[in-house]
Structure formats: structure tokens, C-alpha cells
Length: 453
Ligand SMILES: Nc1ncnc2c1ncn2[C@@H]1O[C@H](COP(=O)(O)OP(=O)(O)OP(=O)(O)O)[C@@H](O)[C@H]1O
Image (cartoon, rainbow, N blue to C red):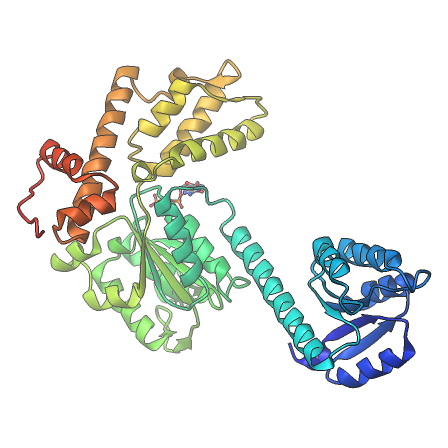
């Protein structure tokens, strides 16, 4: 914001001082009020970011009661306003009281205009930064709204998405089925400057090859039997927005080449057409497959891989998101209960344990479906183990142990890799003592030979 548009409200009834301030703050639009009522009117009509306020205001010009009342009312009506209070020389008590009431800063009379200019300029900067911060917070929370998860891995994923979303980079979302790839693809779109453009999704695994080409690139009238009219493909429909290529690992090789050409040249030709149409879209892809293995097997083009995965984001399976299954289950329960008009209080303790211990091969989608059917089937106000239909109780608790052991083993393996085999460091990373680490290495049959200390 340029300083020319900055409103500075001065609440001061001394005409001499008013003139002096007008002259000192030439580069601001200075507004004057000489009592509480006019100050509040100015506050409402001009919404100044910064107010400079005298404590001695009529009807109590030699006291402070009206000054404090005015300060309180300004902050109540416009809590983000930065109020700088002018106090009598050496009047430390009133300065402290003003700050306690929420004033941004104070200056003593007679005013040192050089110092006052610095305080005012700092107040504007802080106001601007706070406003930016509020805007960012409300933007990202509404964009990631509906994405549930408090596990460390998911918080990291959300942070990464918040960073890459606003860029124009192609994003590759990797993860098992039902981990939320489409949900995050939409979040990337909403975080970008293309958010008002379309989000167009296509599942490359669900459509046979000849149809997939037509779906993506569109066709001209008469391009083939049945092509009665010119039809735009998904790429063209996504202009100004985002194209989400789901299951890109299943794209047939001929189409991979065609997509690569499009990504290099950013123009398409409809099937049966001759016209090159420039297209401005952002690509977000997803796959549950191991693309590097597909590249090795000659089933996925390496050059296309690099084009479509400028940034890769791995969505962890639900079994690796500590605590998220319970959180999601409660969320889906509330949703399903309101959808089906049921009053259900929650889950029994056993049901919650089973939810956290289950391995959820179908991830969040499986959990969502499980909770949904449980809500429909529940006869009581609480969902028990039986309604979840996750298998027998004994197996659930056994699998919980297995899940924990598996997580422990993997954490140790990761720490070993990170610390290059230095066992003191591994113990530090894991937050255990060296003897405990030795026991764990024995328990899981992991080697100690790489110990470098
Ligand atoms: N973190 C989450 N918070 C809330 N809902 C979620 C979360 N992750 C996934 N879901 C929900 O789970 C379901 C499956 O998610 P989504 O379709 O995004 O998964 P996917 O990885 O694209 O699956 P697939 O690979 O099978 O296409 C959706 O209903 C989605 O809204």
C-alpha cells in the first residue's frame, strides 16, 4: 500500500498541535477529531489503520477518564486498529495503563515529531502484516477445510500442499487408493491463482484407449463414425484452470507421447482437426502405481514422468497416520448421522480401538464407507464393534499389536538410514537409550554392524 492512501486519525482538541501534525504527516491523509463522538464517526467512515489519540479529551481535558473511555471504544469497534496514545511528560502510569487496555504504543508530550513518525510508520507496518497474515490464514483454512488429519505426516503433507498450490508447477500425488489424492488435487487448484477457473478430472484407468484420446483432446465433426459434432476435450475444457489426470500410470503409451507433446508445446489439435489450439492449463496427476518401476519396465515414459512431476507429494496410507483414523471416523460419523437423520453419540471404546488398529487397505474411502454403513445399522446411540464389521475382536487386537510392531520397526529402519548407522544418533533420533535400542534391534532382527561410533 502506498503511504498516500494511508489514513491517520488524530484525536486531539488543540488546534495548534493539529496544524503541527498535519504538517509533519504530509504523506498521510490526516483526519482530525476533537472528541469521542467525532473520533468514532471518523473511525466508522474512514477505517484508519492507525489512530493517534490524546488522553485529555473534553469534557475532561485535564484528566484521563474520557481519553481511556475513547481508547476502549475505538478498540472495541475496530480491534485491529493500532492506537498510539499521547500522554503527559513522565506520565508512566497512564502509558502503562493504555498499553494494558490494548494501545499499540505511546508517546509523551511535548511530541518529538521525528520519534512519532517512526512509531506511526511501524504501526502501519504491523497492521499490514497482521492483515496479510489473517488473509493467508483464512484462505488456507478454507482451502484445506474438509481435509481431516492431525498426524505429523499429514500436517507435513498439508504444509507442502500450501507451498506448491500457489505455484504453477505440475504436481504428482502418489498414494494408495482412497488416500485422498483427488481431495488434495482440488486443494492445489483452490490454492492457485486459477481457483476461479475450472477443475476438470479424468480417470485414465477407467476409459478405453480410443475413447480416452477423444476425451482428452476432443474431436472435429466427422473425425470418425458417430462424431456428429465438434467436441472439446478435457484439456480444452480446463483452460484457465486445472486438469487432474487420475491414474496417469495407466495411460497407454501412444497417449503418453501425445500428452508429452502437448506439455512441451502447450497446443493441441483435436482428432480430425488441423488447427493448433493454444491451451493454458495446470496439470495435477495422481497414481497408486510405482512410476519408477513402470519406467524400468518400459511402460511409462521417463521424459513424461519429469514433466508431470515437478513436485511429488506422497500421501501416506491411513495405517501410517497415527491417530487420524479415530479423528476421521468421528468426522464421518457426524456427517452420516446428520445425513441419515440419526442421533448417534459416538463409538464404544472397543470400536475406537478396532478403528485405530485396523489396517484399512482401502484407506479413508474404506473408513468412510464402514462408518456410513455402521450408522445405518446401529440400533443404539453408540456404534459398537459389531456394527463396524471389521472381523472378530481377537484378530483386531492382534492386528493392533502387529501394526505397532511394524511401525516401530519401520521407524528404526528410517532412523538407521538417516543416521548412516551411527547408533548413538539413532538412539537420539528415536528418543530411546542405547541399551533399549540394542534390545529393539535384536527384537526386529536389524543389524548393528554399521555402528560407526
Ligand atoms: N484427509 C481426509 N479428510 C477427509 N476426507 C478425506 C480425507 N482423505 C480422503 N477423504 C475422503 O475419502 C474419499 C476418498 O478420497 P479420494 O477420492 O480423494 O481418494 P483417492 O486417493 O483419489 O482415491 P482413488 O485412488 O481410489 O481415486 C473421499 O470421499 C474423500 O473426501
